[in-house]
Each structure stands twice: as C-alpha cells, then as structure tokens.
Length: 542
Image (tube, rainbow, N blue to C red; front, top):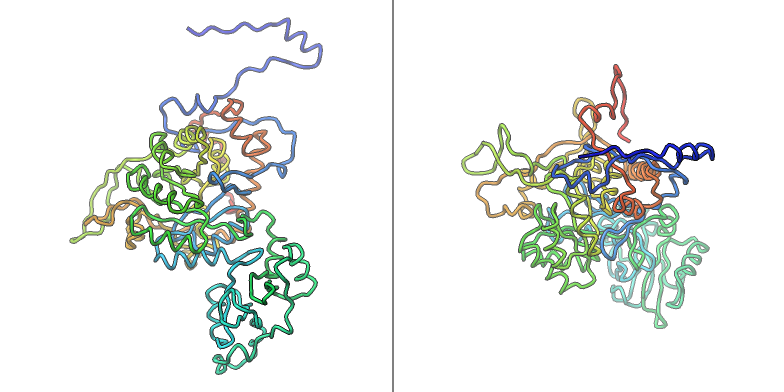
C-alpha cells in the first residue's frame, strides 16, 4: 500500500524565512523506470524534462565517440545507402565534423574510388600524390581532373609518385590550348623545376603552409636530398582548414571516410580494395547482425587489419550485442525496422510486390524489430559496460529525435531520409506537382535489391522469391548539407542547453545517474506538442 509522505511544515517555514526552499517534489521518470516496463517506445512517445541553464548554447561540446578509436566533433554520420552516401556526401559531412559511409550497392572498384576521392580531398602532407611523367599528355591531366577533381599534378622523371621531380602542370598551363592539341606532351607545357618553389623533408606543416601562403602558388612539392618527390601540400587545403575547423581528419590530415561491406566471403576482396584506398572504418551492413556470418567476418577483419575500426549490426537487443562485442567490434549500429523506408517490423500489407516467375502478389509477415527509443537505450546501456559506442540508426525525423537518441545513450546518430534530397546526395532532382524532389529508397526495397550487394544485406541473394523489407519513394529538396547540418547541430546544442547538459558525455551521465527526467506522452500530448489550432501555416524544411 502506498502512503502519502508527511511534509515538514516547520522546515518549509524556516526555508521561507531565508528566502529559499528545500522541498522539491520528485518529478518525471528515470530512463530505467520509463524503458524497463515492457513497453516498446519510439522517440515520439516521451519527452525530456528541462533542467537548469547556466551556460550559452554555443558552449555545448558536441564531441562524441563513433568507435573505440574514432571521435567526431559532430555526432552525425550518413547512412550507407545508394540514395544517400557517395563521395560528395562523405566529403561534405566530414568537413562539418561528422563522417560518411559509402554504400556497397556498386562494384568493389567503384566503391574504393569513392573512398579514394574523399581521402584525397583535403590533406596536410599528401603522401603518394598523383603524378604523371613528361611523356604523358594534356589529355591525361584532364582525365585525372575528371576522376579526382584537381589538376595540379607533379611531373616526375619516371611518372612514379616517388620519382625525381622535374616539373608541375596545372590547368592554367593548357587552358588556352586548342582541343586538337590535347595530345601535346606535358614536357612542352609544364612549369619546369627551375621555376618551381619547393621544400625539403625537414620542413614542418606550419612552415610549408607559410611558404605556400607567401608564394601564392597552388602546390608546394616536398623533395628529399636527391630531388625525389616525397609529398605535396595544396593551397586549397589552407582555405578548407580555415573554413571548416571542425572537419573530421585522420593522423595524416585526411578526411575520415567509412564504407559498408557485406558478411559474404567474396567481400573480403572488396575490403582489401577499401583498405588500400584508405578507409577508416567499415560497417558490416546487415539488417540482422546477430549471425554466424557477421561474427566470422568481424574476427577475420580484426585478425587481418588490426588498425581498421569495425562497426557491427544491426542489433536491437543486448543478447544480439553480446555476440558482436565478444567477436571484437569497435562500435554497434542499433535499429531494425525503424527507418522511414524500412518495413521489417510491419506485419501485413494489402498487396506486396515480389520478384519471381511468375509475378507474385500477396501478404507478408516479418514482424521483427523493436521501437527505436527502447532499442537504443537497451543496447547502449549494455554496450557501455564494455566501452563500445553505439550508433542510433533509423527513426530520426528531426533534431528533437537526435537529442533524444543521444540522451538515451547513443554516441552518434546515423541519418538516411534526413540527408536524402540534399545537394550532396546521389541522384538527379525532378519535379512533381511543382515540388523539387529526389528519389530515396530502402536498401531492402525490390528496386535496390536488383543489385546483388543489396540482396546480401537481407540474406536474400539465393531466394527465388524476393521479399521486400523496404520501399522506394521520394523526398523534398533540403538544399545543401552545409546549411542543413549546422542547423541540426544548433538545434542539438539548444536542446542540451534546455536540459542543462554542457556536453554529450554529461548528457549521457545525467541519464544513467537518474538526474535526467523523462515523461511519457499520450496521443493527445503529441498532438498538443505539434502545430495545432491554426487555419494554415508554413513550415520550412530547416
């Protein structure tokens, strides 16, 4: 039986005389009380109660762990989906402090080329720079510019990246050449060594940058005592460092880049190409990560590439997480059926399209997964005991959901639909009823599963009848992530300020100690929390 606790009126009276009160009734629920009662909750099913503010929003530290060895200054990563992340998205989000994961719905060589383009985009000392020889042609430079996006190429005696430097060529050396002269040899148009500014291997990065700035040249070659090319520094990197102070970089000042692979043995070749391209982390891309195939792949990677960070998943229970943690993963991806284009949790459809001979329509019954808020809390609470960071993947529809995911123990959030239809996402824009759109599809959709790599994610490449676990659709234009991501970051910082957390680590600590208080929302409370009572309104995308 519950009894009402007596209130010490004399103490309250004394507090009133001093101008302070010591009595504060308990309010809200802890995360344990809210999420350990057997109900499965989504981000919309609860709110976080406000705390005390004694700092400005821009003081909130967004630094958080992606894996055991990789930390990001912006706790946001892009999903490895073929309508979300290729090199442009990976470059853009890394410049803003996050990290992109290149999808695997392409050939291994193509995926590795995307990673290589990201890694070569911004660097300090560029090791093994792209080089050509004196007998190469102007056409060769144009092809490299198309492939990598730059045209400042060192020319070495033998065309190798460690050969003796003899000159440098850039687009300004052949801009005014007639098209018919594309076969002109580079030795005819390059800037010779005698006219170049270069430095020796004793130079520091700061000194090299100062030399570049003073000389107003585009590239600064670094050579050894024998005149052999050792590395290169680009002027454009100086500007990028100034414009993007939060950029995610490795020890060589290259942008961080991740990629997805399947658990199939033939993807070991894909993995080898990705490692050669400089990939920093791989995601084992599976809708259900608790499998012998994923465990074996994790063990293979950790034995073969000890420095490569491996993210396992997807998982939604502690039992699933245990097997992957025991195998040696450096991070976990949490979410199953919560994405806007994922239908793994759904139990029935009026009509379902499958690929078969003959054409088949009917109902489906998978009904597997977990509401995302509960999944994130359960897995994060378990994984933190072993120092394994958690990525909340799926169900993120707005900046409030990002705040809630991180408050429940996730260290980063992975976004698909939220980044689809940005300028940096793959695909072409089209118009429908006057609205500018881009295609967006789940990797478990029939459309995406035309490619074998996507089928492998759902263990369906040998199926005669393909059962969809995702759909295809379209998303309205959101503009560039260079505008959108800073909006999300600012919203997250204001959310943490309202809660009273000066950093994401403090936010998680408040949740685990019970200082963070939550409250369940009824259906009518969710209506009240949205826009209501207006004849009409306009809601901007950002």
